[in-house]
Picture 1: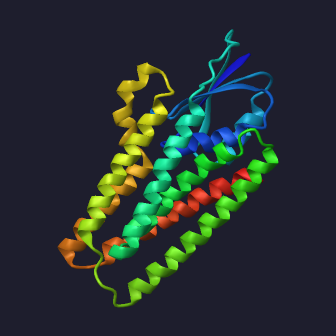
Picture 2: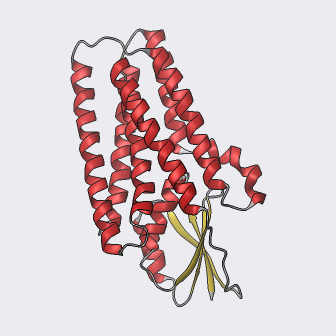
Length: 264
């Protein structure tokens, strides 16, 4: 048995962990995957050569880089029996906030909230693919991934079109207070999701949770919407909301292409 350590520089959210799991699922030489999200490390226990595994990790464009390969005597691994239950929990939280942010975004006329709701939906897709295709074939998972990816891209394109329409049109200012309040709750929800998923990890990593939460892309997006809300009120302009919406829509499309790679 060999143990290879990868640095995954863009692995700052549990949804990236699930993307990597799905990508490597079909490689028979892999015995176990051990993720260290706070330190952006992936440890692969495998037999044979690392070439196919390394190629698959790099193809995800998550900044994967092999650090080391060494022999190991470890042959037994503890499977997390609660993983499916934990995934259902974070799926429910992400999907609930997709609905909340989409609804409040439309009512408050905030593209930042609408875009962030799609980011929540994107995470839901990743968790959903992991759950709904459990026990199914790799082909089934790839089909689901393809549908999810294209649907996500379609929603983001609609969002871009709406941003352009509002940018060149005369729209009412978005409700800045709704933007700030809902984003604060979304920030808390993302922190809860990361905490729930880390419950399956080593207790020794508890001290890393705070730093992990504040390096998450999702949290950065939430903070961006909060700042945009403050600027909307301060400048009496909808431009900050449209700018953050555009940035998040771009991130959603980037995530969609990662999902589509799993379908190849």
